Length: 170
Image (tube, rainbow, N blue to C red; front, side, top):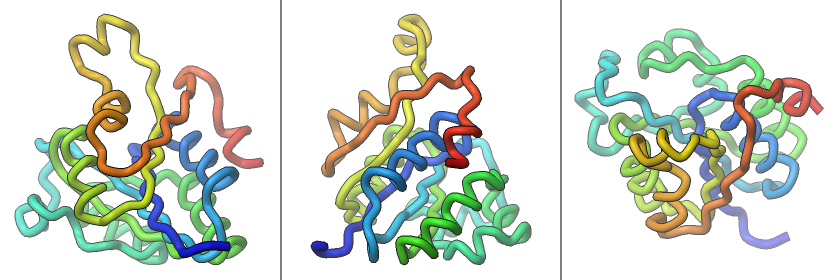
C-alpha cells in the first residue's frame, strides 16, 4: 500500500455519477485514501451561504454532516440515499475519509478548479452519453476534463436509461 490519495468523484446524483462512484469504490479506492465528493450546482441556485463560498466552493463537509438534512439544504443539495449508503460502507470497510465539497457555476470549469484547489491525485466522473447534437450544443464535461484537468481523469461510461441501482448495491 502506498501513500494515501485524494480521489475526487464528480457527483450530480444521477445514475451515471452513481456508477462512477461504484466503479471508484470497486477498482480504485484503497485503505486510507480520501474521497472528495464534488458537486457543482447551477450558478442560478441560491442557497443561504453561496456568496461566502462562490469563489472557493463550500468548506469540506464530513460524511456524517453531509447526511444531515439541514446541512444539505444549507448548500442546496439533495443527496441520494443510495450514494450516502455507498459512501458510508466504503468509509467503514476500506477505512477511508469521505468529505463533500460544493461549487457553483459551469461544471467543466468548476471541476477543473476543484482539481487544482484540492490538489487531487485523480478524478472520476460519469459520462452521460450525450448524442452528437446535444454534445455540440452543451459541450461534453468529460471531454473537457480529460483535456484540461491537471490530474488523471477516469470517465465511467453509463447508460442513464438503464437501472444502475442493482449494480450500485452489489
